[in-house]
Length: 153
Image (cartoon, rainbow, N blue to C red; front, side, top):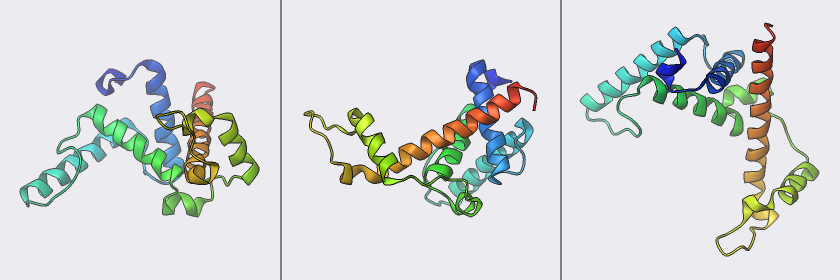
C-alpha cells in the first residue's frame, strides 16, 4: 500500500502515526486508508466542480494518492503549528517561556542568518521561533504515536 503513496517503510509508518494523531485531535473522523481515499475523492470532486463553475481556486486541480497524503499531513502539521480553532480548543499546543525561545535562538542562530552572514535579531524572529518550537512538539507527538504503534498499544 505504501508504494501507492510513494513512501518508504519508515515514512509510511510516520504518515500513519500522523493520521492517527489527527484523528485523536478530531481533525479527521477516520485515520484509515479507505477513509483517506474517500477524502481525496471528495476533494477532487470539489475541485472538478469549482473548475466547471469557473471559480478561481489555488492548488492542484487533481490530487494523486501521494499528493493528497502529503496535503493532509502538511495541513495537520500547520493546524498544530499555527493553532487552528480545533487545536486551540483542545489545549494540546504548548506555550513556551521567554527563556525557552531565547535558548532556541541562541542554539540555532544559523537558521536566522541573511545572505551576507548577518543575523536577524531575536525580536525580529520570535514568531518564527515559536512556530519552530511547535513543529518540534508536533514531531514528538507523532513519534510518540509511532512508538505506541510499534509497541502494539
